[in-house]
Image 1 (cartoon, rainbow, N blue to C red):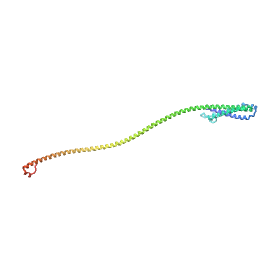
Image 2: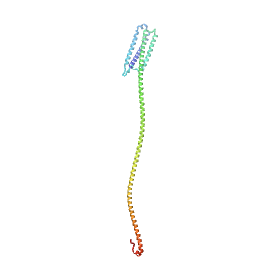
Image 3: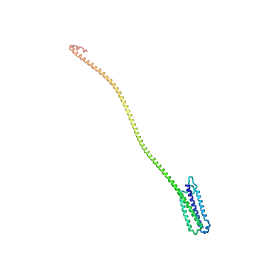
Image 4: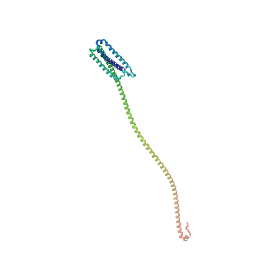
Length: 299
């Protein structure tokens, strides 16, 4: 499609250019030969001019077609007429078609205005020029139609590509939105886990502090328990020693009490004996007063 379009455009440009060139040269020749008579004009074989123009136009078209065959690997034109862009070719074709139509109309007007003065050869030349301009306009029309068809084809492809890109964009946008929502959800989970981790770390620190305080309290209490045990052991030892001393003291007290009782009994017995002896002595002194002066007490 691209090669055919470029070939048609190049051919139309070549034909239009050749037709305009021949028309300008023939118009100049017409002005030079306007004083010729009709007889000399009738001997000039007007058909030859037409054939010459057709040959020239065909050769120019063939040359343009040969130039249009220069493509690169992607099917695009290289240097020469084919290198013209689609927009510039369309504008040039429109300009050439308009110019060709104006020149063809001017040729017809020249036929009427110069009717009696111009020879048959001049009219024939003008007719040939009008024919060439018509062919150039037709070639420009064909090129313009090919350009419009190619642009429509490119527009269709561009619209299809646009639809594909829009679909891809919608898919990628949906994927991006899903990824964004997933990222927000993950961030929320991370924030929750971070808060839980911070709370757990604070709880662990408090627990460690409480454990350390409890360990210190336990150590202090253990020391107090040991101290209390030592005190109990000391008191037990003192108690045992006191009990032993008490037992010894009780034994000594019992012995002392027994000895005191014996001593009291002995003293009572001795007193009773003394009283008895005293009573006996009184009785004896009453009978023998002399013997109380010479002797002592006898038991």
